Length: 187
Image (cartoon, rainbow, N blue to C red; front, side, top):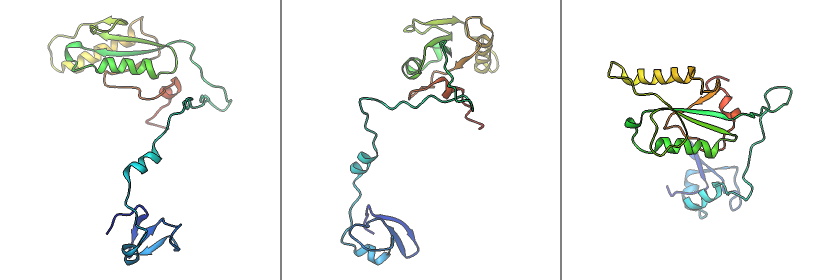
């Protein structure tokens, strides 16, 4: 079989064919006809991806604000949203935390407060709540994370509503509080 951009799914002895300009058919052709077709055109990867690519204009698309319910009002957060990362510097294996913090600062739509619970990375100049890693014990990683979560939930410098982040979690497009507040696991 010669590859062809017009050829679709095989249905028994017939193929779907999307070449409606040069051929007169009902949308499917017999396998032998398809093999002898003079209008075969090889797929061009670059032409197809060019057609599918999104071209950015001078004015990027911004989705309309989402309403909170049937009344039609739009939720707006006037206060800064706090993003909190638990962090252990000696366990880090690269610049993941730096990229995560930058992604929040770049893509979150609204004022942001960033806080790190644990060790201060050498490059970070923002808010840090110092908390040393717990000593050697069984399930050390789990217990250390649990103690940092307890600090996040009880510390007076952490807002009552905050976004719990990890160093390998990134925002990759414009994100609003509504996007974060929408449950994803259940409708």
